[in-house]
Length: 337
Image (cartoon, rainbow, N blue to C red; front, side):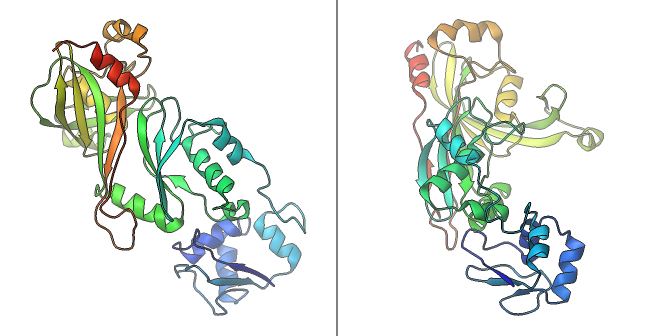
């Protein structure tokens, strides 16, 4: 018999989902068969797999050792750790610029620098997602052996060249809670950016967005027919408030009400006020004017997160904010009122 005790990281997921990851080479049909035969038990009792796991739960596997190793996908009997490489630790050490802004038992909030992916685009990429796992391994808050059944992960995404606040779940419960409040738009996300031209009044922008995979760009329209919506156009809302107005540009605060790829960048460009430095949706000649000042990418910064009141969550009701990058101040100092 082999036994596993559920820790706080894995707690909160369904038993069958846990088994699917833990016995990765068994297949769900075989797993359910073993549950019915009580060859897999939960706290000494038969389970249909629908139970939600709690910290301290005991799972027993009544298999022969070679069968157990085979179902787990271990190369040979007696292998103790199939996650022995230090890929995640290397990721943690390779991006020292990432800063932890907030941390509790359930979540992390990071300040992601420009040039770092939130999540992998290709298998060989190193992203903030791998950094989080490496950080927790280095701290001792996560064991490599736990990675077969749960991996901490980033919950929201920022473009590679957008800086600012990223939320990550350290535990299954933290990940589930953050994903829920992000999907329901209960957490309010704010950005700062510098755009071309003068915007003197706050405004709610509404429209429809469609992403073109071939070009990795989006198209914005004010309206969309039913057929266009069926073809991929989705409703978007972006609220902006001017903070400082100069002769040639405006510092804006953006509240992202819906969260679609490239939404802020494309939505502002669609009304004739593209973001400074934006190579996809901006104005090349205007961007070039500020290149000597260090503008090599879009000046868009995720600066503030406002969390709702939640039961049993340390982050409940908190506001997390960070300063703008120094490049913002440098550009503003060149502006004329």
